[in-house]
Amino acid sequence: MPELPEVETVARDLQRRVAGAVIDDAEVRWDRTIRHPLPSERFVAELRGATISRVGRRAKSVLLHLADGRVMTVALRMTGALIVADPGTPDDRYARVVFRLGDGRELRYRDVRKFGRIGLWERGGVPRPRRGRPKPRGVAERREPYRVGDVFARHGPEPLASSFSSARLAGRLKGRSARLKTLLLDQSFIAGVGNIYADEALWRARLHPLRAADTLTPDEVRRLHRAVRAVLRQGIVNRGTSFGDYVDTEGEPGANAERLAVYQRTGQPCLRCGRPISRIVIGQRSTHFCPHCQAAPGNPAP
Ligand SMILES: [Zn+2]
Image (cartoon, rainbow, N blue to C red; front, side):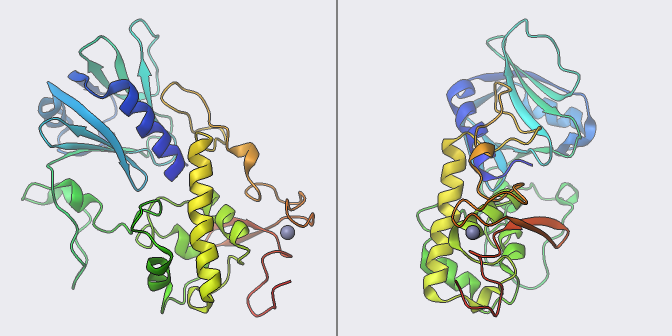
């Protein structure tokens, strides 16, 4: 499943390849891919003629900013990919939405398992601190126009933003009894981290995945902060981690899988101490760690 580095790679490629392009038309081949506006005919009608001004990322979504201020969000989820196809490229049976660009190319939203979602939103909607009852989830049913900021209202800070300091992480960990692995996967805690980079960050920080968040020393918080940012940056430099599904805008896999320290390396030697990597299941997610370097809660560090 694409996490922050994979989505960032796609967004940067698209910025280079389709910023400035006009979307002449779109074809929706799998209705449920479209989240907003509905029905999908309305999505197509509202998109026709729009210019892509720039491409960015928030959490695990690609953001295509349109010249008129609206924003198209693409959540790739499990197997989604955005492929730029030159004229004459054979059709793709897994293309769920096809955007026809003014220069003859196609931007294809490809998704084998069909979990990804695409929305078109008004600008604005900067999240305010949550108060009282949570917002309703069915955004498309709301009467007022939904704005792109509202889509991400439940998401936590971006871990690579300069404002995401070690002190800010410490503040978010304070009073939380959740286990570190669980918390790192919680998108309302920090955005963009998934199973692969959570395991990698905890190994790098030498913290056991079952440690309770509020038991970390100030030094451990600093290590975790550095580790989360380092593994995400390394993932971006290597154009993402591919285990079969993730590909970039040219259909190519990333190179980060061979540089992972623990994820899917069960039984192989730890890159730091040489002892075998273990695998446990936390919250139904497989978790990889070194039992020697990452001391269990209650045990002194080696
Ligand atoms: Zn080790």
